[in-house]
Image (spheres, rainbow, N blue to C red):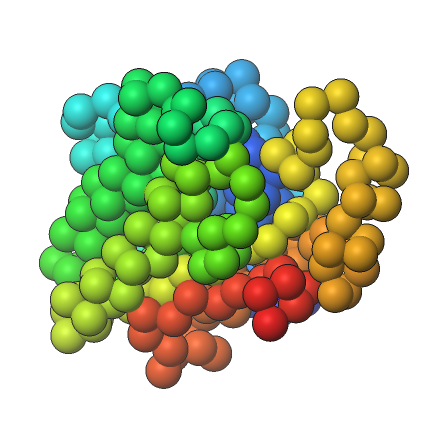
Length: 253
């Protein structure tokens, strides 16, 4: 058992989702106190109980990052309850509607941008403010390989929002490395999560569809994305600043 995060407080937004849940559990297994945030309190409580059942330390905060003031309140709750914030993983996101640009509803576009991009900005704003005042910290934002290549039809809003997260990551990294805050991103490709399934599609059907599309021949396991997140958040990657690590089995190679 490695203990890279002993005595550190870690916030994972979107903590009840597939990747968020696995990532939070991985941090707890390495000694962190993990706080999961999101909109669905029932799902958050379940995720926290799973971590605690495994001997980890976990807590939750209900937050809707599209609501003014919730990002600030989220960070205040974490630091107030646990005495600090050392690592933040900004994972909360939505896939949004699928369809060509000309048919995309204006409100649907705004919702995807608000959740995926503005939510990351607001979270980072308050996370960095605390870290800057308390000796530094690390942030890992979850972007997407779709934001790198943009080739998936009907995904303009999602692709644009995730490309924005990648660029925002680089800008924030340059702005705040002198403050002791290190910011990087992970851009997963298709992963074994509900988000990768098309309507009515089974996991077996999805795997068959992706076998030829992904050079590695399969979607990632969420734990493989979590491994990348933990490495970027750890001292082992101390010289990486503003990096976007693409974890997609060679899709964008």
